[in-house]
Amino acid sequence: QVIELVQFLLVKDQKKIPIKRAEMLKNVIREYRDAYSEIVNKAGKTLKEVFGLQLVEIDSKRHIYILINNLPCTEGKYLCRDEEKEKMGLLLIILSFIFMKGNSVKDSALWEFLHLLRVYPGKPHPVFGDVRKLVTEEFVRQKYLEVTAIPLTDPQEFKYQWGPRAEQEISKKDVLNSVAKIQGKDPTFWASQYSEAEA
Amino acid sequence: ENREAVLNFKSNRLTEALEEANALFDGVSRAREAALDAQFLVLASNIGKEKANELHSEMSAFDSTAYAEDLLTFMGINRTEETDGDSEDDSGGFLPRDAWKKVGEEALKYFRRAPVFHFMLGSFKSEPPVPKQRIERQKKASRGKAKQAMPAQLKKMEESHQEATEKEVERILRILQTYFENDPNIPISFFDFVIDPNSFARTVENMFHVSFLIRDGLARIKLDEDELPVIEPTKPSGGAEEDSRPGARNQVIIRLDQREWK
Image (cartoon, rainbow over all chains, first blue to last red; front, side, top):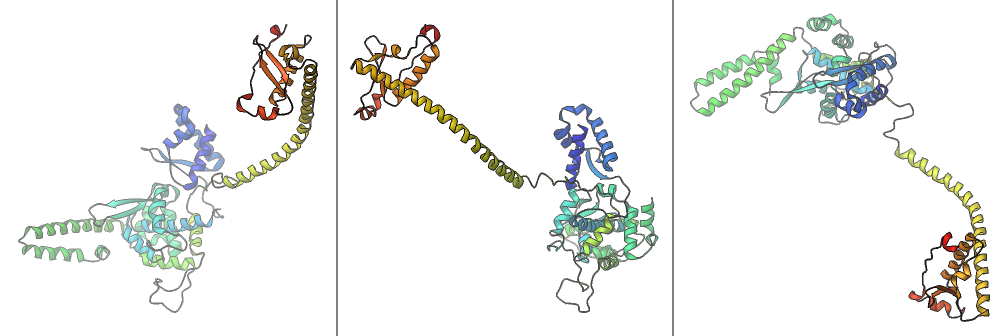
C-alpha cells in the first residue's frame, strides 16, 4: 500500500494541485483505512529517502497535502521544461511584489505593476497566454497565491497574498535577496522587509 | 478611482476629502443626501484602514516602478532610441524571446519545488490511443499470417475427412440402391439397413451417413404402417423438383443407445 500511495502522490503532484486526504483514501488506501496514518507516514519517509521530497500538510483541518523538494537548492541546473521555468519566473516576481509591499496587495495594484513588465490581464501574452487565468486560477489552485475578496468594495476588489505552497517552497529571505540582486542593492536597504525576512 | 493616489501615505487627500464632506454636510437637508454622506464615510474609513495598514508595514518604501525597470534590464531588454507613441511599450524597447526564461532560471534557484514526475518511457495518459492501435494492428497482421498457415494444414485434413465421409455416403447410397433394385417399391426398414449387429459404433456411423443422403434428397425416410421408419432411394429424375417443395422434407430424430441396439 505504501508503494501505491507513493506512486499516487507522485503522479498527482504533476499538476501541482494539492492532494486531499479523501482522494488518498478513496484511490489507494481503501480497505486499509485504519492504518491510514501509518501508511502516510511510511510513504512520507519513502518520499524523503528515495526521492528527496517532503510531504507537507498545508491544511490540518481539511487534510490537504503537497509535495516539496527536501534537498537544499543547488546552484546547478534544475531540469524542467521552459514553460514551467517561465511560469516560475512570473510567480517569483509576483511573490516578491507582494512581500515587498507588505504581504498583501490589491489586484489593481498587482496588475498595475505587471503592466510595467508588458503583462496585461486583458491581452493574450506571447509567453503566458491568458495571464489573468494563470494568475487568478492556476497559481491560486496550486496554492501559490491566495486571493480574498475585500469587503464593502464596489465593484468587488480582491487582495493577493502568499499561498501556503509558496510559504513552504520559498523563504522571504530568498525573495528579498532576489530583489536585492535584481536592483543591485543590499537587502538591508529595505529595513523592515529585511527584519521580517530574518525573523 | 483615485484610490492609489489617496493611499500614497504622503498625501493628505483623505483628510482634505473628509474636511470637504464635513463642510458639505452642513448644507444637507434631505435624507438621500444624508445617505450619500454615510456611504462616503464608509468608503473613507476603508481607505483610512488601508492607509493605516500600509503605514505599519511599509516603513521602508518599496519603489515598484524601479523594480520593474530593473527586472526588464535583467531580462535583457533592448532599449531603442525611438519611442512609438501608440504602442503599448511604455518605456520603448522590446523584450527578447528568452526574457522570461531568464527570470525563471533565477527563480528556480529559490523554489523548493518538487520536480514534476514523469514516467521515463512517457506517461500513459496522453499516449495510449496511438501506440495501442499500432500494436493491435500489428498483432492482427501477425496473427492473420499464423492462422493462414494453420488453416492451410487443417483444410487438407478436413478435406480428407470430408472425402472419406462422402465416399462412405456414396457407398451406402449404392448399397441402398442395390437393395432396392432387387425389391423395387419396397422400402427397406431403416433399422435393418443401418444396424450393424456387431458394432454399435458402426451403427451410429451408418446412421450418420444415411442422414447425409436424406439431407441431400438422395434418399427418403417414411413411416410405414407399423410406425417404423423405412428408407428408400429417391428417383433421380424429378426428384429434385419434388423435394424442393417446402413440406417435402421430413425430419426424423432417432434415439439409439447401446441397450436398445442390443
